[in-house]
Length: 193
Image (cartoon, rainbow, N blue to C red):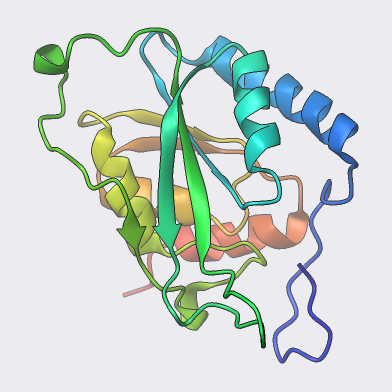
């Protein structure tokens, strides 16, 4: 993720250098723990790019989740170009649940959400190497019933926590990096009057 010669440098984050086998084992461990603390019918939304897409679908299932599908995120033409090749314009949101999500007519959310989201990354709110737009997170969280409790085990710069707060959900974020914890505190602290 680190690009040499770029103007913006982000703090480092742990765990981005595992080989495929150790990544699968590691992802299965944290996904299993998330599944353990999720209520029956609870949902998982997990971002990945094309490199880890097959592995993450396996890890989700190894972690005990029921894999539900993939929702593409089109980052628009503002994403990183690759001269003479295709733009890395898409990431994927893997969806899963802890067991059944019930009959469609019994679900607490009645909206029919799109199967793809198109949202550009705003440089002013990208505070982590893999930062996501708050607007995108809000759209994805529309799948949740009102006043849901969210767990973000990799809180990064706090985008999910910010979106959850704005939508009146409760949220728990876990972040190992002291640098990113500071960024999260700044983003979640209301401005002084």
